[in-house]
Length: 164
Image (tube, rainbow, N blue to C red; front, side):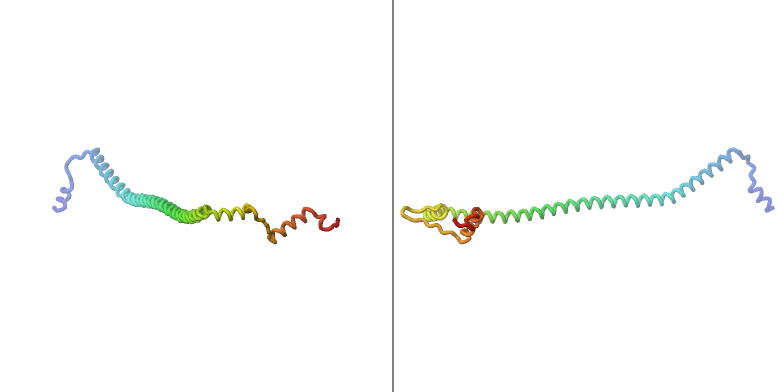
């Protein structure tokens, strides 16, 4: 009896529509196929997602590095400009000091130029002027005299070797 009950238990007396059963099996297979594809896609998608993430992070790092280099270049250029301007300022300050010293010297000379004794001295030395009743003697330097003798000898070679 035990056997018979078991067999009857699993045996169904219902009428099964074969087309309907095939359709159900097909749907189950499609579901399981889709599930397997999703799992495979998830597995491979995870790998490709990691690759995409790595590429994206690499691009981000490169962009940040490029921006950082750009800022560093701009800052370096501005520091160079500041150093050049500082050196130029020091040079201009030095020139200003020299010009102030020259101005002071010229002002001192202007004070002495207005003095009648200075005017008389310059007239005697530079223009060879004399007062009435004075005699002017011009003395030559030895160097100057030697230069004039050489110039005379180069211009007149006959005087040296011949007698007249």
